[in-house]
Image (cartoon, helix red, strand yellow):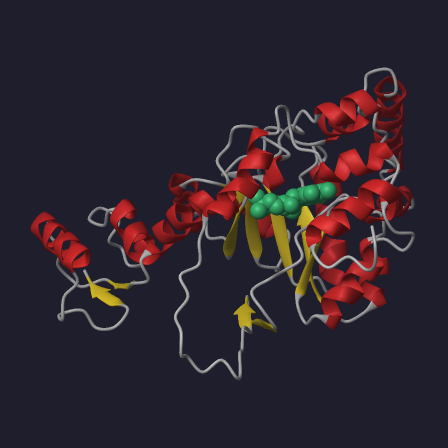
Length: 354
Ligand SMILES: Cc1cc2nc3c(=O)[nH]c(=O)nc-3n(C[C@H](O)[C@H](O)[C@H](O)COP(=O)(O)O)c2cc1C
């Protein structure tokens, strides 16, 4: 490539040239046929921008607020595993970048650096992402460490009871490097009273690592050995008893799950298909964002039984804000649809009243 990269595609090309194939494939690959991975990108390509002209853009402010933290734009750093496969300093430099851009970094459970190293590297606002171990006590220790080290929210990734079948990782016999957070965790634990349990856990993990090597990617095997695949909605209550951090649920894709998330009282949701790395043939995240997000809006207004999500999505797609009035009947919908189709002076700019 000639000159400095100027867009993400060029960065990706550089990464392909610079990284060992096993690591490049780990970062870039999706699950199974990679249909969802491709669809994630295609769906964005299908979204066209309808520009409005002669608007004063001499001062543009994209800043927003997430869970009370002001950030420069509605762009956060998602939790992504193993940054040291690509950079010797790993997540520590990612966190510095987050601080420089005035945004929030969600540190992956599967980070190359410990959560303490990242915490002490800069003053970025940090969230901590977790998967829950079969050994709940170990998960609780991790959560407490995150809280002690100033992480501001807990992101529970809920779409990965099993790791997606990433065929490139299997072919490459991708070996999971030692997880620093767990390593430290184990040694901390070892100094406490129930050391024997820990020895057993460490042995379990070591035994597992022995057969991983003969069975392709060790990532899936590690996850199968350690993660609690039985973790479900009722367990959110347990999670909220072990932390004061707000909890976000990451990895939901449907209106139904968004509503459940509100009902169990979490502080937020992250609509996500895990970058196509988990369940292949799940829909592109951007295509379900409206459905999942708006159902929350409707729920907040206690109008779920009456509001048609599709209609609401339609309104939003066409630039209308929705205000929910006290009464609503089917005839109102028909009326509203007619108005939306024909345009009418009864609409205030960008508003429709249901
Ligand atoms: C290399 C890589 C590693 C990732 N590791 C994690 C992880 O450890 N934990 C997690 O919750 N998500 C992980 N993700 C998923 C991202 O957080 C994010 O969901 C995804 O890149 C974007 O897809 P979405 O828009 O559907 O969320 C990873 C993604 C990539 C590309």
